[in-house]
Image (cartoon, rainbow, N blue to C red; front, top):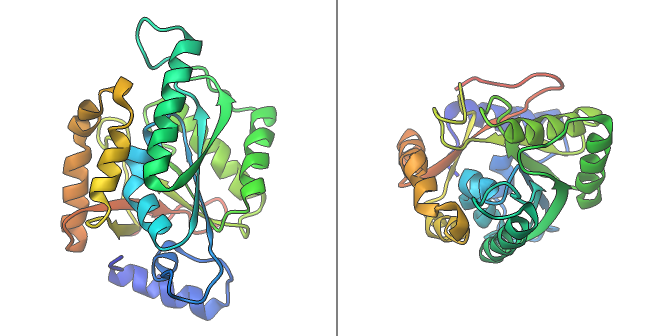
Amino acid sequence: MQVKPNNRRQFVKTISSGLTLLTLPQLLQFHKKDTFSSKKVVCVGAHPDDPESGCGGTLAKLAIAGHSVTIIYLTTGEAGIPNQTHAEAANIRKKEAINACHLLNAQPIFAGQIDGATIVSNETLKQLQNLINLEQPDIVFTHWPIDTHKDHQAAALLTIQTWVANPLKFELYFFEVCTGEQTLVFKPTDWVDISDTQTIKKNAVYCHTSQNPAGIYACGHAIMEDFRGREMGAKAAEAFVRMTGKGSISLIR
């Protein structure tokens, strides 16, 4: 990962403050050959294909570096296949997600909410908190809360509340999907060079054959990877916003 000047200052600030949490730039500096205990990475997505399209290249990169990656799907995409019952669609999309996770070297978990009918409540918050806390993550990725899809918003809000309950447990980063169409007013704080994992990401997205994967890329993901790469001087990149303080989000470029 190429760290921009702003992120270099943040990196120094984090080290000097003595915090034990690892930021995304630090995590990406580790390699399998280094002597370190594998860190835990969790991604919370609303539907099968969201984590893959939003940060699949980064998840693959972290897995290759030796970190343990888990993807928590808030729903199983029950409403995502026309002319299929919820049970039929969930069965198909669960298999697709498992296949995608195999390519990303990630462990899939399904939280059990229903596509199109997600709920933000004390009960569903406790459920997601339990799933995340069982993983004991060092870093968590989830949707940007200002997404147009209500399921994306639910995934983001539940994850944010899990972080708010104890922000010193893990670092929290937000990813983008179909920026301008779904993700709105997204101003990255961090970029990850996915030039070497771009193909893995695309293959993982294409595991979701029921979702017209070519259409997923056509909504702007190929352009986003190219544009974010240009921002950091790489062939392809994914961008993130880092939650930098309890109750606040850094939007500084």
